[in-house]
Each structure stands twice: as C-alpha cells, then as structure tokens.
Length: 351
Ligand SMILES: *Cc1c(COP(=O)(O)O)cnc(C)c1O
Image (cartoon, rainbow, N blue to C red; front, top):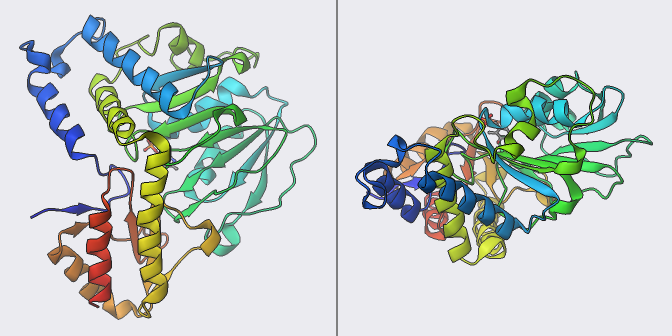
C-alpha cells in the first residue's frame, strides 16, 4: 500500500531520488563499485560535490561573495559554529526566539558575543511570530529560525534591519524564494527538505570570516572547509549525493518558485479543512502558519485514537504531534505530492 509520509524529519524524499540513490548504492554508473566504496578524492565524487554546490548557487541565486559548504554535525552544531566564526566577544547580536530550535541556538551562541533575546513568543507556547520588535543600536547580527518545525510557525516577511541576518532554515530551505544577500549566514540540516541526515548545508558570506580574534579549532573553522571545498576531511558522500539528486529534482520541477507554488497549494488545502471542519482546530496564529509543518488538534481529545487508526488504515504515517504541542503535525515538505494531503483531508472529513 502506498504510504503518505508526514514525518517531520528525517522526512519524505522524491521517488526518483530514492531510485537513483539506490542504484548508486549498488553500482555507481556501472563502475562496479558502490558510491559508498569510492574515494572522496576521486573524480566521480569531486564532480558530485561540484554539481551539488552549483545547484545550490543556481536555485537560490547565491553570488560569489558567499561560500557554499557541506558540513557534518547537523544544524545543531551550527548553533555554536556560526557564532564562534562570526561574532567578536563584544559584538551585539540579537536572537529572535520562536521555539525549541531558537532556544537551543541561544544557549550555544551566548558564549561568543554580547547576545540578547530581541523578542520571544514563549508566552504563548511559541504559537506565533513576534513582530515590531526593535533591535538595540549597533546590533551586528540578527539570528532567526525561518520555520519552526515543532510549533508550526513560519516567518513570512523577514524583518527589515540594518543587522545582517543569520538563519536556521533547516525545515524550509528550497521551499520558497529567499534573498541570500540579506544574510551573513544560512544553515540547514539536510534531512528535512534537502536530503539525508549527515550533511548540513552552510551558505556564508566570506568577508565576515577570520575577524573574531579567537582561536577556532581547525574542524570548526569555516575557512578550513572553504579552502578545501568541503573535503578537508572525509565528507558524507552519500548524503551529499542524495542532496544533489534532490536539487536536480527541484530544478526539473521548475525550481524554487514552482516549489513555493506547490507548497502553498498543499498548505491551503489542509488549513482550509482545519478551519472548515468543526472537529479540528489549528494551533498557531493564522498569519504565521507554516507551509511546511501544519500543527492541529482534535477539539475532543477522546477522538485522537480513532483519528490515528483511520490515518493508519489510509497509509498515513508520521502525523502524531511533537510532545511539546500535542495533537497532530502534518509535515509537507517539497517532495510531498498534493495527493497525500488529499488523502489526509479525506480522513479528516470522514471523522
Ligand atoms: C531539525 C532541526 C534542527 C536540528 O537539526 P540537526 O541536523 O538534527 O542538528 C535545527 N533547527 C531546525 C529548525 C530543525 O527543524
């Protein structure tokens, strides 16, 4: 039976990506070796890394001022690595706290700069994005989480500020157009909307680096990885290959604008049902509703079990909400087809 994969991450991949990754796992381009068995210094892998980088640049319109890196350690390592590489100890840096991931980023980054929380939506269990906050004069960077995977909110209009933004885009990169020039650094764990766990994408403005005055361990210094094209040590080749395949798929589908249109269509369908169906209620402020992770509740909790059973029968997986919100969460990344959202809506209508 066809499964409808609504997991938040690791998450759904396009069929063609899985098919081609499987082929490469057994016998890469008929060379008699698995991609997993090949030297990362060989021409095949070097070419994969170059293709992946050029697709990132093409799809997001990344200029030469920026380096594109494929690192390890997950988005969680970028919480401290971004701060360690960009902030001088006395730099004023603002963090917008919109959920679990922002909170974790603050915890790690505060050791490297004069960090303050500029606004927070903790007062309402992070169910909205704060607006109209003012940065302190002289603030150098503003860190934001573009999409809050757990709570189901998404920044729709990025704040206009003099500070350069640093963004955790782990769960919505490549889902909609962005203006890279507004950012000092963008990072994203690949396992939500890009590819497999094991690789983290970093896009960093090169002229910001090497200015902190602090010692940075070799492996944690972006400049190390820039100098060696993300192959200073053995890179996670297979996750990078899967990322490359996924970016090729995005390009073939019409690029980022086409993804945004597709994601909007899916989100509109599901949110309309949540609003129209008297049994369900959304958990976030309407104007901040994420197109990637849709969080909702059954008004009568006693129906939860019945709903989950019906979902299971329809092949719907990964719908259970995160423990900090409860209820349900439908993650609908790029790879999800509209037909899967229709399957979920059908179950909701049948309750
Ligand atoms: C999942 C997630 C992370 C953590 O990513 P890891 O790669 O597991 O470290 C960080 N930020 C956001 C927004 C996420 O969704």
